[in-house]
Image (cartoon, rainbow, N blue to C red; front, side, top):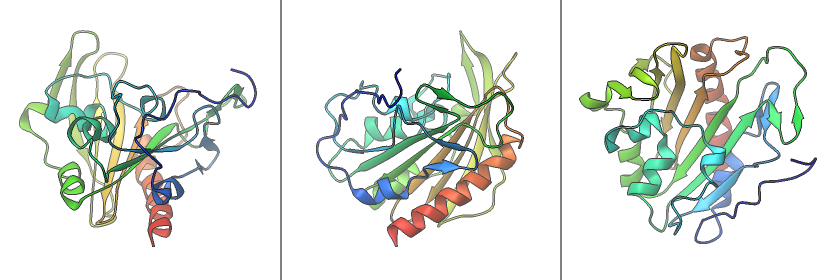
Length: 227
């Protein structure tokens, strides 16, 4: 990567994206910021190429695979949107907030913030309600993978935001006790998801405590953009 270089993967969207979700995304949090190499983007659905790397470059996903109904917890909302709601009228805004920005890296030392991704989905009420449903299928509570061992999806208590909000962590075994911390906020206008991955060096603040702080900042900005 060269200074100022951006990812040249084409946006797989079918047309211009709604500007409101783009304006609603965080561009930074404390001392971490949006990646200059993969800047935030809005994808207008439907997309013809669901295997495009454009969205995965900007979203954090977990290593576990399993039944499709577990995907929104393990892989993320973006994956379920593309598989089940790849229809006109749905927009997906995605960004990665990182201590890496293109070829530049932070000075050595533990970051105050944390690497995380944010996704904002707009579309019909039925789509938002289904994606925002916090009911965890019984077969998703315990996860196994031949390469990554075992894990669980465990609820986390968080302050209420929007019309409905919920959070959880995806645990692991061995050297990775937790793979991800995630929070979902639903309103009648949009659905917002924050995902923090396991990372080194660890942020000064415990990700379980940092997650609701990021979610509050993301919610505040989204509400201003959609007002």
